[in-house]
Amino acid sequence: MARPSLSLLPPSPLSSAPRLLSAALLGLALTLAACKDSPKPAADTSAKPTASQTVSVEALAAEAKGFSIGSAMAVRTVYVFFDPQCPHCAALWNAAKPLKSQARFVWIPVGLLNPTSSTQGAALLAAADPEALMNQHEASMAAKQGGILVTGEVDAQKALVASNTALMNRYGFGGVPVVVAKHAVTGELVVKEGAMPTPALANALGLAVPSGN
Image 1 (cartoon, rainbow, N blue to C red):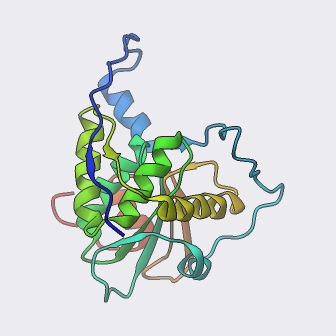
Image 2 (cartoon, rainbow, N blue to C red):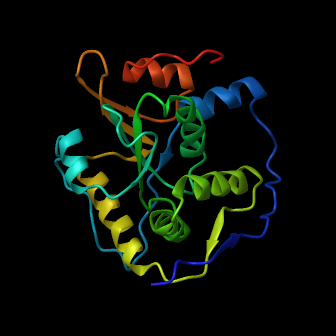
């Protein structure tokens, strides 16, 4: 099967809403917030269970479909649920880059925010070099261009994104990003929702904070 061809979405118009927060407060909001689940399209009849299951790294290793960043031989594995259209997920992507020498990050795309989320997530799963494509995607998102545009056939990968979304919903998470791992020192389960800067992410995972962060 030929890989989907990719390009960038055209720039979207900037919002005309007045800025109500100072730059410092806005930065803090982006650090602490997460992208929330939006209503599903009418065609999607799935619903979240009333009682969520308990997440575990073992379950994610067996069921989640993602792409790995970092050393394949790394002892530590960190799982991250993310939506390609979520700016807080983009912030966590950049925060995790300095840590990829210490752990393998498995990025699990889900479709929460809009139909484009699922299509872009599918393209990332289908990519020969998902790290390079993710960097391209996030650069486009930062430039307010909407991310990669997928024109090829990715139905098989979209089914995997839908499965990831259902898996995330089973655990009762209402927003992205979500980090799941075992603490590098104590071995205890770590579950963190929302974006974090590199030092906070390293501390949460029990990793060394890289110099300069």
